[in-house]
Length: 251
Image (cartoon, rainbow, N blue to C red; front, side):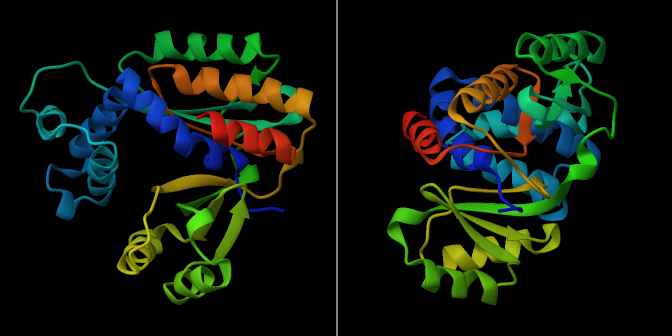
């Protein structure tokens, strides 16, 4: 099945662990700073900042942390300059990976990310080497255990979503980037909790992995996600049902 992401259904649960480590606050602060620097400090006038602030609220990031990150972005706080970049490459068994980065030193981050790829039998490539295998779409994740699939599908399609997919214990709602906020509001308007809502790299097709290969690729994904400069990681693999359920349950 194309147009879905097993990793997306795993990583939204991983966020709870990251919050305990405080790592997610640091990553979201960087996201807020970059968004404010590029589009201004008013979330109502800056969609990228609005998304970042919404993400901060979802993980209960303190308000003062959010304000400090915004001020840093618009020039009201001290700090080094931050850069956004995207690294692409291949993981084990021909999987394609995209890592979105926010860093204060690209010369330090690039070799560190390359080393992670190498450690897991992957290969960091040139810009554009795998991004053609993906599409940038709006992605909304909702827990599937609490909702009837047919009824939920009517809600999201009426709101302008392109597709609804069930991956493990999660519904993945796929929509255009421009309709992400409207679809999210329509879902929340039905008193349905949205786990995550973001612009994501959605694979056009997926590679089926067996359990051994799946564990190796998951190791690479988690190692990349754990790097302080990595905001998001995307890939195009399918896990066996048992391994997907295990990965979702342990986060």
